[in-house]
Image (cartoon, rainbow, N blue to C red; front, side, top):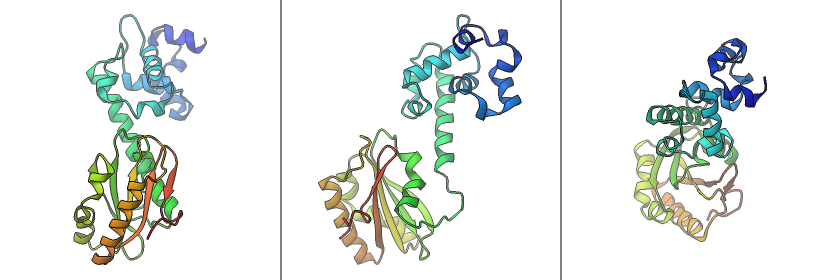
Length: 234
C-alpha cells in the first residue's frame, strides 16, 4: 500500500506494522516519516479523515517540512482543517520542546571555545524566531558558560541603547566576559551599520565595567557572522 493510499484510509484499517504508534514501538521513531510522527501528536482524526491525512495537510501548510512548524504559532495551526485548539497546542509544545533539547548544552557549564561553539549553542533556538531577540552569554574566567539571558525583544536600537541592562546580569553573577548575540529574522546575518555602532558602544561600556565583550554573533537561518572573526570589534 503506497503512502497516498495509507493516508486515505483510517489508521485502524492499516496493517499493524503500518500504524504510526505500532511502527514507533516496533521499529523506533527514526524509521518513521514526518507525517507519521506528526500523526502521533495529532492523536486522532475525524469521521472523514485519518490523523495521517490531517498530518500531511499540516506539513503542506507549513512548507512541507518539519522545519516549517517552527514558525507556526498555535493560532495559525488551529485554522488548518482537522486541527483544533488542543491539537495545535500539542504540536506547538512538541516543537518548542525539540528546540530546547537541540539547544541545550551537553554539559552544565560548557566551555565556549570560539564563535562556532557559541553560535551552535543558540542556533536551533534562535534561527527561525519571528522577532529579534538580544541575548547575552555570561562567561567565567575559564570561558565556561555561567548563564544565558535574553535582554529584550524587538528592534536592535532599543536593545542596545541601555548598556546597564546588557551588563547588569553579568555584574550580579560575577562574569569575567560576555558574548553578545542576536538574531536577524530575515535569515541574513550580515551586520547592519546600527549593529556595528551599537557593538562599539557596548564594548566601551564593558571596558569601563571590567567585563570584556569577547564577541558579538549575529544568528541567521543556519548561518552566523562573528564580529571577532570579521575583525569588527573595536
